[in-house]
Image (spheres, rainbow, N blue to C red):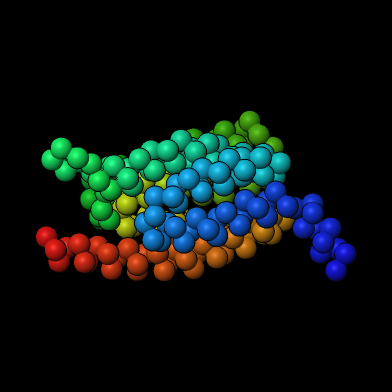
Amino acid sequence: MDKIIQWIIENWFELSAAALGFIAIFLQIKQNAWYWGVSIVMVSMYIFVYVEAKLYADMSLQVYYLIVGFYGWWAWLFGKKVKNSRKSIPVSTTSKIQWIVLSAFAIASFFGIAYILIHYTNSDVPRWDAFTTALSFVATWMLARKKIENWLVWIIVDITSSVIYFYKGLYPTMGLFIFLSGMAVIGYFAWKKDLKNAEKTI
């Protein structure tokens, strides 16, 4: 029992960040704009967690999350212009052109990040770190624009990340990402239902 208490004390910061992640995913599924507020606090905390764990690509990703967080918050509240007012953007699908652009961006990001990590850092998982980071760049933009396929990309990212965090000994974060993997499946079907309902009203 003492060892458990000691472990909690030593890892309280990471545990707190992971706890915010559990709250954020429920808000995300419900399309509640406060998701972005919680996310901004969470990613700010994870910047420090990842620096200490030498996951530098993930650290830089948190900075990206932080920036996109403010944009996503605005988009979920005022992203769609309707006559003389603005309202939240609806759930939509990703077009073929968007997929091409996003895929090209992800591939370029992967090779660029991997090169930097291999040659300029002491990361021991450079390619896996680059892989999850590149896909996360894409998934976050898709989330900010309420593209339903963002959930499918997150499933890949979350499963891969949970393996990385197990290897790095970041067990609270590993648990969070295993949970996020399952919630991403739920989120996809919840958003799909909203998308079908919206199409019926058109």
